[in-house]
Image (cartoon, rainbow, N blue to C red; front, side, top):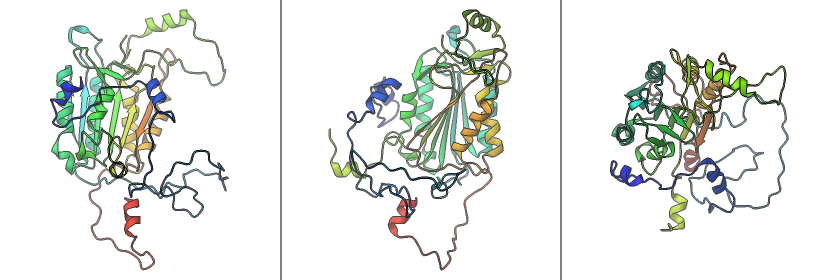
Length: 377
Protein backbone atom coordinates (compact mmCIF):
# COMPACT_ATOMS: atom_id res chain seq x y z
CA UNK A 1 0.00 0.00 0.00
CA UNK A 2 2.86 2.38 0.83
CA UNK A 3 4.29 2.07 -2.71
CA UNK A 4 1.01 3.22 -4.23
CA UNK A 5 0.78 6.16 -1.88
CA UNK A 6 4.42 7.13 -2.39
CA UNK A 7 3.76 7.59 -6.10
CA UNK A 8 1.20 10.32 -5.30
CA UNK A 9 3.57 12.51 -3.29
CA UNK A 10 7.29 13.02 -4.07
CA UNK A 11 9.65 11.90 -1.27
CA UNK A 12 6.76 10.41 0.72
CA UNK A 13 8.01 7.82 3.18
CA UNK A 14 5.48 5.46 4.71
CA UNK A 15 6.40 2.56 6.94
CA UNK A 16 5.20 -0.78 5.60
CA UNK A 17 4.37 -2.07 9.05
CA UNK A 18 1.36 -0.70 10.93
CA UNK A 19 1.19 -1.84 14.52
CA UNK A 20 -1.91 -2.38 16.59
CA UNK A 21 -2.16 -1.21 20.18
CA UNK A 22 -0.99 -4.50 21.68
CA UNK A 23 2.10 -4.62 19.45
CA UNK A 24 2.98 -1.03 20.27
CA UNK A 25 2.83 -1.78 23.98
CA UNK A 26 5.24 -4.68 23.41
CA UNK A 27 7.56 -2.58 21.25
CA UNK A 28 7.90 0.08 23.92
CA UNK A 29 9.44 -2.33 26.43
CA UNK A 30 12.81 -1.42 27.84
CA UNK A 31 14.68 -4.00 25.75
CA UNK A 32 12.84 -3.38 22.48
CA UNK A 33 13.79 0.13 21.44
CA UNK A 34 17.40 1.37 21.31
CA UNK A 35 18.02 4.42 23.42
CA UNK A 36 20.53 7.22 23.05
CA UNK A 37 21.95 10.14 24.91
CA UNK A 38 20.78 13.58 23.96
CA UNK A 39 23.94 15.65 23.76
CA UNK A 40 22.50 18.43 21.63
CA UNK A 41 20.79 21.76 22.20
CA UNK A 42 17.54 20.06 21.18
CA UNK A 43 17.16 18.86 24.75
CA UNK A 44 14.54 20.93 26.51
CA UNK A 45 15.02 22.26 30.00
CA UNK A 46 12.41 20.64 32.20
CA UNK A 47 12.53 22.98 35.13
CA UNK A 48 14.22 26.21 36.10
CA UNK A 49 13.46 25.96 39.79
CA UNK A 50 16.30 25.70 42.26
CA UNK A 51 14.58 22.69 43.79
CA UNK A 52 14.25 20.86 40.51
CA UNK A 53 16.14 17.57 40.44
CA UNK A 54 15.75 17.00 36.68
CA UNK A 55 18.91 17.46 34.64
CA UNK A 56 19.07 19.74 31.62
CA UNK A 57 20.60 16.91 29.57
CA UNK A 58 18.78 13.57 30.08
CA UNK A 59 21.09 10.56 30.53
CA UNK A 60 20.46 6.87 31.04
CA UNK A 61 20.58 6.02 34.74
CA UNK A 62 19.19 2.52 35.28
CA UNK A 63 18.37 1.97 38.96
CA UNK A 64 17.75 5.35 40.58
CA UNK A 65 17.49 6.71 44.06
CA UNK A 66 13.82 7.62 43.76
CA UNK A 67 12.67 10.26 46.24
CA UNK A 68 9.34 11.94 45.69
CA UNK A 69 9.30 15.63 46.62
CA UNK A 70 6.42 16.26 49.05
CA UNK A 71 3.86 18.93 48.21
CA UNK A 72 3.97 22.17 50.19
CA UNK A 73 0.25 22.82 49.79
CA UNK A 74 -2.78 21.66 47.84
CA UNK A 75 -2.42 22.91 44.28
CA UNK A 76 -5.12 23.70 41.75
CA UNK A 77 -2.63 24.39 38.94
CA UNK A 78 0.69 22.98 37.77
CA UNK A 79 3.89 24.65 38.91
CA UNK A 80 5.20 24.28 35.35
CA UNK A 81 2.19 25.99 33.79
CA UNK A 82 3.65 29.49 33.63
CA UNK A 83 7.04 28.21 32.43
CA UNK A 84 5.75 26.17 29.49
CA UNK A 85 5.89 28.12 26.25
CA UNK A 86 3.18 28.29 23.60
CA UNK A 87 3.16 27.70 19.88
CA UNK A 88 2.97 30.84 17.77
CA UNK A 89 -0.61 31.54 16.79
CA UNK A 90 -1.13 34.90 15.12
CA UNK A 91 -1.06 34.45 11.35
CA UNK A 92 -4.22 35.07 9.35
CA UNK A 93 -5.40 32.59 8.41
CA UNK A 94 -3.94 30.50 11.23
CA UNK A 95 -3.51 27.69 8.76
CA UNK A 96 -5.35 25.21 6.57
CA UNK A 97 -8.07 22.88 7.82
CA UNK A 98 -9.37 19.80 6.02
CA UNK A 99 -12.73 18.16 6.72
CA UNK A 100 -13.47 14.78 5.12
CA UNK A 101 -17.03 13.56 5.66
CA UNK A 102 -18.13 10.11 4.53
CA UNK A 103 -21.90 10.15 4.92
CA UNK A 104 -23.13 8.08 1.96
CA UNK A 105 -21.62 4.71 1.05
CA UNK A 106 -21.78 3.21 -2.42
CA UNK A 107 -24.09 0.26 -2.98
CA UNK A 108 -25.08 0.48 0.67
CA UNK A 109 -21.87 -1.25 1.77
CA UNK A 110 -22.35 0.70 5.01
CA UNK A 111 -25.35 2.41 6.49
CA UNK A 112 -25.76 6.07 5.64
CA UNK A 113 -24.49 8.33 8.42
CA UNK A 114 -27.61 10.43 8.80
CA UNK A 115 -26.97 13.65 10.72
CA UNK A 116 -23.32 13.92 9.69
CA UNK A 117 -24.08 17.04 7.62
CA UNK A 118 -24.88 18.83 10.91
CA UNK A 119 -21.42 17.97 12.26
CA UNK A 120 -19.80 19.23 9.06
CA UNK A 121 -21.53 22.60 9.16
CA UNK A 122 -20.85 23.08 12.88
CA UNK A 123 -17.20 22.08 12.56
CA UNK A 124 -16.69 24.25 9.48
CA UNK A 125 -18.19 27.28 11.25
CA UNK A 126 -16.03 26.66 14.32
CA UNK A 127 -12.78 26.36 12.36
CA UNK A 128 -13.57 29.46 10.34
CA UNK A 129 -14.27 31.29 13.59
CA UNK A 130 -10.85 30.15 14.82
CA UNK A 131 -9.44 31.74 11.63
CA UNK A 132 -8.59 28.65 9.60
CA UNK A 133 -9.00 28.32 5.84
CA UNK A 134 -11.39 25.34 5.65
CA UNK A 135 -11.83 22.85 2.81
CA UNK A 136 -14.59 20.22 2.90
CA UNK A 137 -14.69 16.99 0.88
CA UNK A 138 -17.59 14.54 1.00
CA UNK A 139 -18.10 10.86 0.21
CA UNK A 140 -14.63 10.13 -1.17
CA UNK A 141 -13.63 6.72 -2.51
CA UNK A 142 -10.31 5.29 -1.37
CA UNK A 143 -8.26 6.78 -4.21
CA UNK A 144 -9.95 10.16 -3.91
CA UNK A 145 -9.48 10.08 -0.14
CA UNK A 146 -5.72 9.64 -0.38
CA UNK A 147 -5.48 12.10 -3.26
CA UNK A 148 -7.04 14.85 -1.17
CA UNK A 149 -4.91 14.02 1.87
CA UNK A 150 -1.68 13.99 -0.13
CA UNK A 151 -2.50 17.26 -1.88
CA UNK A 152 -3.40 18.83 1.45
CA UNK A 153 -0.21 17.80 3.24
CA UNK A 154 1.85 18.98 0.24
CA UNK A 155 0.19 22.41 0.09
CA UNK A 156 2.83 25.14 0.08
CA UNK A 157 0.57 27.35 2.20
CA UNK A 158 1.61 25.30 5.25
CA UNK A 159 4.89 27.19 5.12
CA UNK A 160 3.03 30.39 6.07
CA UNK A 161 0.80 28.69 8.65
CA UNK A 162 0.94 28.39 12.42
CA UNK A 163 -1.04 25.14 12.62
CA UNK A 164 -3.17 22.66 10.69
CA UNK A 165 -6.39 20.79 11.53
CA UNK A 166 -7.66 17.57 9.94
CA UNK A 167 -11.20 16.34 10.69
CA UNK A 168 -12.43 12.90 9.59
CA UNK A 169 -16.06 11.81 10.02
CA UNK A 170 -16.79 8.26 8.96
CA UNK A 171 -17.75 4.74 9.93
CA UNK A 172 -14.88 2.88 11.50
CA UNK A 173 -13.48 0.38 13.93
CA UNK A 174 -10.36 0.60 16.04
CA UNK A 175 -7.48 1.83 13.91
CA UNK A 176 -9.35 2.29 10.63
CA UNK A 177 -12.03 4.39 8.97
CA UNK A 178 -13.94 3.58 5.79
CA UNK A 179 -14.03 5.39 2.45
CA UNK A 180 -17.27 5.74 0.48
CA UNK A 181 -16.52 2.56 -1.49
CA UNK A 182 -16.18 0.55 1.73
CA UNK A 183 -12.38 0.30 1.57
CA UNK A 184 -10.62 0.57 4.93
CA UNK A 185 -8.05 3.28 5.67
CA UNK A 186 -5.56 2.78 8.46
CA UNK A 187 -5.43 6.00 10.46
CA UNK A 188 -1.70 5.59 11.06
CA UNK A 189 -1.15 6.12 7.34
CA UNK A 190 -3.07 9.40 7.58
CA UNK A 191 -1.02 10.63 10.52
CA UNK A 192 2.19 9.56 8.80
CA UNK A 193 1.54 11.95 5.92
CA UNK A 194 1.97 14.80 8.41
CA UNK A 195 5.06 13.73 10.32
CA UNK A 196 8.38 15.58 10.10
CA UNK A 197 9.71 13.35 7.35
CA UNK A 198 6.75 13.62 5.00
CA UNK A 199 5.54 17.15 5.78
CA UNK A 200 8.55 19.35 6.55
CA UNK A 201 6.52 22.54 6.01
CA UNK A 202 4.65 21.75 9.24
CA UNK A 203 7.72 20.81 11.24
CA UNK A 204 7.57 22.46 14.64
CA UNK A 205 3.90 23.42 14.16
CA UNK A 206 0.93 21.78 15.91
CA UNK A 207 -1.14 19.29 13.93
CA UNK A 208 -4.62 18.69 15.38
CA UNK A 209 -6.61 15.64 14.24
CA UNK A 210 -10.28 15.14 15.09
CA UNK A 211 -11.68 11.67 14.37
CA UNK A 212 -15.43 11.09 14.64
CA UNK A 213 -15.84 7.35 14.09
CA UNK A 214 -16.50 4.19 16.05
CA UNK A 215 -13.49 2.25 17.28
CA UNK A 216 -15.51 -0.90 17.96
CA UNK A 217 -19.13 -1.84 18.46
CA UNK A 218 -19.36 -2.10 22.23
CA UNK A 219 -21.97 0.20 23.83
CA UNK A 220 -21.14 2.00 27.06
CA UNK A 221 -24.05 1.16 29.36
CA UNK A 222 -22.90 3.66 31.94
CA UNK A 223 -22.63 3.15 35.71
CA UNK A 224 -25.26 4.08 38.27
CA UNK A 225 -23.32 6.26 40.68
CA UNK A 226 -25.90 5.76 43.42
CA UNK A 227 -26.00 1.95 43.26
CA UNK A 228 -22.69 0.27 42.37
CA UNK A 229 -23.25 -3.05 40.67
CA UNK A 230 -21.01 -5.67 39.13
CA UNK A 231 -23.79 -7.58 37.36
CA UNK A 232 -23.45 -7.61 33.53
CA UNK A 233 -26.43 -6.52 31.42
CA UNK A 234 -28.87 -9.32 30.66
CA UNK A 235 -29.21 -10.63 27.07
CA UNK A 236 -32.86 -9.55 27.13
CA UNK A 237 -31.88 -5.96 27.95
CA UNK A 238 -29.24 -5.89 25.23
CA UNK A 239 -31.72 -7.20 22.64
CA UNK A 240 -34.34 -4.68 23.73
CA UNK A 241 -31.86 -1.81 23.38
CA UNK A 242 -30.84 -2.89 19.90
CA UNK A 243 -34.46 -2.83 18.80
CA UNK A 244 -35.01 0.61 20.28
CA UNK A 245 -32.21 2.23 18.28
CA UNK A 246 -34.10 4.12 15.59
CA UNK A 247 -33.28 7.82 15.83
CA UNK A 248 -29.63 7.09 16.69
CA UNK A 249 -26.89 5.16 14.97
CA UNK A 250 -23.31 4.03 15.47
CA UNK A 251 -20.33 5.11 13.40
CA UNK A 252 -19.16 1.48 13.37
CA UNK A 253 -18.74 -1.50 11.05
CA UNK A 254 -20.57 -4.43 12.05
CA UNK A 255 21.26 1.89 7.07
CA UNK A 256 22.58 2.98 10.63
CA UNK A 257 22.97 6.79 10.89
CA UNK A 258 25.97 8.50 12.41
CA UNK A 259 25.61 9.07 16.18
CA UNK A 260 26.20 12.81 15.81
CA UNK A 261 23.47 13.07 13.17
CA UNK A 262 21.06 11.21 15.42
CA UNK A 263 21.75 13.61 18.28
CA UNK A 264 21.00 16.62 16.07
CA UNK A 265 17.89 15.14 14.45
CA UNK A 266 14.33 15.80 15.52
CA UNK A 267 11.95 12.93 16.25
CA UNK A 268 9.86 11.90 13.27
CA UNK A 269 6.61 12.29 15.23
CA UNK A 270 6.17 15.67 16.88
CA UNK A 271 3.60 18.36 17.66
CA UNK A 272 0.58 16.10 17.10
CA UNK A 273 -2.61 15.88 19.12
CA UNK A 274 -5.45 13.52 18.19
CA UNK A 275 -8.98 13.73 19.57
CA UNK A 276 -11.03 10.57 19.11
CA UNK A 277 -14.79 10.59 19.64
CA UNK A 278 -14.58 7.37 21.65
CA UNK A 279 -12.14 4.92 23.23
CA UNK A 280 -10.81 1.74 21.57
CA UNK A 281 -13.41 -0.99 21.25
CA UNK A 282 -16.43 1.25 21.81
CA UNK A 283 -19.11 2.77 19.62
CA UNK A 284 -19.63 6.46 18.90
CA UNK A 285 -23.22 7.71 18.99
CA UNK A 286 -24.88 9.90 16.37
CA UNK A 287 -28.35 11.40 16.23
CA UNK A 288 -30.01 11.26 12.81
CA UNK A 289 -31.08 14.91 12.98
CA UNK A 290 -28.71 16.63 15.40
CA UNK A 291 -25.37 14.98 14.65
CA UNK A 292 -22.90 13.40 17.06
CA UNK A 293 -22.54 14.03 20.76
CA UNK A 294 -18.78 14.43 20.48
CA UNK A 295 -18.70 17.05 17.72
CA UNK A 296 -21.48 19.02 19.39
CA UNK A 297 -19.63 18.98 22.72
CA UNK A 298 -16.34 20.01 21.10
CA UNK A 299 -17.89 22.85 19.10
CA UNK A 300 -19.81 24.22 22.09
CA UNK A 301 -16.73 24.21 24.32
CA UNK A 302 -14.32 25.63 21.75
CA UNK A 303 -16.61 28.44 20.60
CA UNK A 304 -17.11 29.60 24.20
CA UNK A 305 -13.66 29.08 25.70
CA UNK A 306 -11.01 29.06 22.95
CA UNK A 307 -10.39 32.77 23.56
CA UNK A 308 -8.77 32.14 26.95
CA UNK A 309 -8.17 28.40 27.28
CA UNK A 310 -5.45 26.23 25.77
CA UNK A 311 -6.21 23.19 23.60
CA UNK A 312 -5.58 20.36 26.06
CA UNK A 313 -7.81 22.01 28.64
CA UNK A 314 -10.45 22.59 25.97
CA UNK A 315 -10.47 18.87 25.27
CA UNK A 316 -10.77 18.11 28.97
CA UNK A 317 -13.80 20.38 29.06
CA UNK A 318 -15.17 18.65 25.96
CA UNK A 319 -14.81 15.30 27.71
CA UNK A 320 -16.66 16.60 30.76
CA UNK A 321 -19.49 17.95 28.63
CA UNK A 322 -19.72 14.72 26.64
CA UNK A 323 -20.10 12.76 29.88
CA UNK A 324 -23.49 14.41 30.46
CA UNK A 325 -25.02 12.96 27.27
CA UNK A 326 -27.25 9.88 27.71
CA UNK A 327 -29.73 8.28 25.32
CA UNK A 328 -32.98 6.53 26.16
CA UNK A 329 -31.11 3.24 26.62
CA UNK A 330 -28.87 4.82 29.25
CA UNK A 331 -25.78 4.62 27.04
CA UNK A 332 -22.81 6.94 27.50
CA UNK A 333 -19.71 7.84 25.53
CA UNK A 334 -16.10 8.55 26.46
CA UNK A 335 -13.75 10.47 24.17
CA UNK A 336 -10.01 9.89 24.00
CA UNK A 337 -7.05 12.24 23.45
CA UNK A 338 -3.60 11.18 22.24
CA UNK A 339 -0.50 13.37 22.11
CA UNK A 340 2.69 12.71 20.19
CA UNK A 341 5.51 14.95 21.39
CA UNK A 342 3.33 17.99 21.99
CA UNK A 343 5.87 20.23 23.71
CA UNK A 344 4.00 23.48 24.09
CA UNK A 345 0.59 24.89 24.88
CA UNK A 346 -1.79 25.77 22.05
CA UNK A 347 -3.84 28.96 22.30
CA UNK A 348 -5.99 29.72 19.27
CA UNK A 349 -6.17 33.46 20.06
CA UNK A 350 -9.28 34.03 17.93
CA UNK A 351 -9.64 37.61 16.77
CA UNK A 352 -6.02 38.53 17.45
CA UNK A 353 -3.35 39.18 14.87
CA UNK A 354 0.39 39.48 15.28
CA UNK A 355 1.66 40.90 18.59
CA UNK A 356 3.43 44.29 18.57
CA UNK A 357 6.82 44.06 16.93
CA UNK A 358 8.57 46.30 19.44
CA UNK A 359 9.26 44.70 22.80
CA UNK A 360 10.29 46.82 25.77
CA UNK A 361 12.44 45.37 28.51
CA UNK A 362 12.98 46.69 32.01
CA UNK A 363 16.47 47.23 33.40
CA UNK A 364 15.86 44.43 35.87
CA UNK A 365 15.23 41.96 33.05
CA UNK A 366 18.51 41.46 31.17
CA UNK A 367 18.43 39.70 27.80
CA UNK A 368 18.52 35.92 27.93
CA UNK A 369 21.66 34.06 27.05
CA UNK A 370 21.79 32.44 23.65
CA UNK A 371 21.14 29.01 25.18
CA UNK A 372 18.23 30.28 27.25
CA UNK A 373 16.67 31.79 24.16
CA UNK A 374 16.88 28.44 22.41
CA UNK A 375 15.41 26.54 25.33
CA UNK A 376 12.50 28.95 25.64
CA UNK A 377 11.47 28.67 22.02
